Image (cartoon, rainbow, N blue to C red):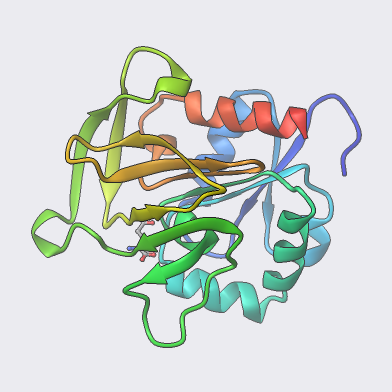
Length: 199
Ligand code: GLN
């Protein structure tokens, strides 16, 4: 752990849009570092798992020896924020996984990959997120997952107009189906940094 006033926040940098998250976190004053190795994971006070391709991220995290230390760190309270593929990585139960795909788990959720099908691969919408206050958040969904079921330990933070849950929280864990790192609205990252500061 960093043990100073500005927290060190890692961004899992095996694959996906980790650079965008690093830029947002740095703009908010956090010391953000890419995490590819277990030694780097040991230095962070919180971790963002970015969007990308969850099946590839799963394979690489096991290959690089990160999956097990990360599960242990989460279980002992490390704050982790997963966006899109990152949310998939955190789910206890995954639907429509590819053959052999595993998740880290820990988040009491059932998540479905690519939940919007090929006709609606990507879309944008405005979402009410009560914990972030007003105005609604403009949210970008790219081959996004949805939370099919929120377990007893987890809480829904935002839903689409049809009721499907797309943002969730559970103690040290935070997840969004969409990509706040792409829109310039930093409220979810700030919310996560508050969690890191409180941990
Ligand atoms: N469809 C991707 C997956 O299954 C997630 C897409 C994203 O992260 N934007 O991992």
